[in-house]
Length: 435
Image 1 (spheres, rainbow, N blue to C red):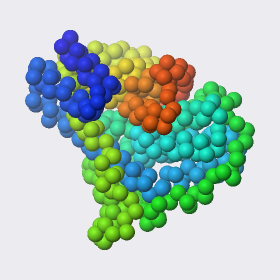
Image 2 (cartoon, rainbow, N blue to C red):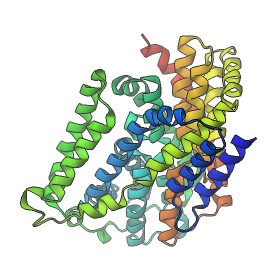
Image 3 (cartoon, one colour):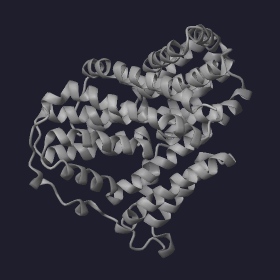
Image 4 (cartoon, rainbow, N blue to C red):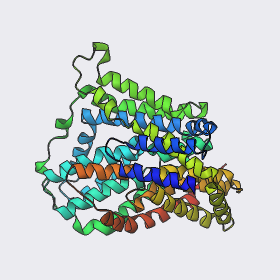
């Protein structure tokens, strides 16, 4: 009960975010209480840090890359191209925006997609004078696709990085399994969003009101370097995966290279058009404290017996066959993530799977099912993921407010069918690519 009380108090502070107290300090405060009360020991700090450090710094580096490219005009340029590709047809623009969100989520993580794509899409909708119901369809689409298509690569979601590192899954093996599964998730997301909001989308929109994509480019040098840098980064991930090189080192090297280019370091900062210091200031440094603090609190829950109960539940599901084991694990994890946030849920799932006595194929299915549940399941509630909280915060700053009731109504409508389709795709695909 003590461990549970500390966790609940910490989660309330993280979600509430009292003025001057970020999510990192809230989580670290909870961890300190857990240490003082003996819920966790000093030795657990090293164990948890070993689990989270690579994922955390990879995520920070990705956001730094995203923010620099955003300041250079890269994402606005892409969005304007997508709007023009729509050719003035609203029913073509909608899936194109969803596809753009999926691409950004894949390479820049779900939080990057929520942070960067949302304001750009809002600006374009305002420029095109979309009605509020039509604009809401696009807004919901950008928010949901950021999470539901954050499966394909290890770097696409903090959940993916933590899980892959915990179970020793290489970048190449993870992509082999999850890229096809993510395509199913994308198709299901687009289909459900279309059924829910297709009637709100206008048949035509005035394409002549859009600026030329080139006008969005603020730093041509950084813009020209973006595609080669991203291609080189993807190659580096696959090459270094078998060598055991931490993903954070590869991503960090790319981030530093881009910072040097944007800051014109070889010229002492002269002629720089992008503020590197602003990008560093905007990076989610609080996530470093949050990851360590919240995971320590959750580790205390595991020490108190939560992991044992979860492991028994997984062993029961494993006895019901592959389909039930996979779907059951995914929905169970999704339910937990939607209540306690997907970051602590990720550690609970990893510890439980590691502890449970499972057949090899079932164990692998459950590992990937936990990733799917923790990536997609948080869309049930606004508190399920940091990306959703960030998305709602960005919307509020732009004057668009989505209440919890309205959000959950949409979340409960969209998430279950997408989650089910994605888990069934995993059951079908994984046995075919397993050794």
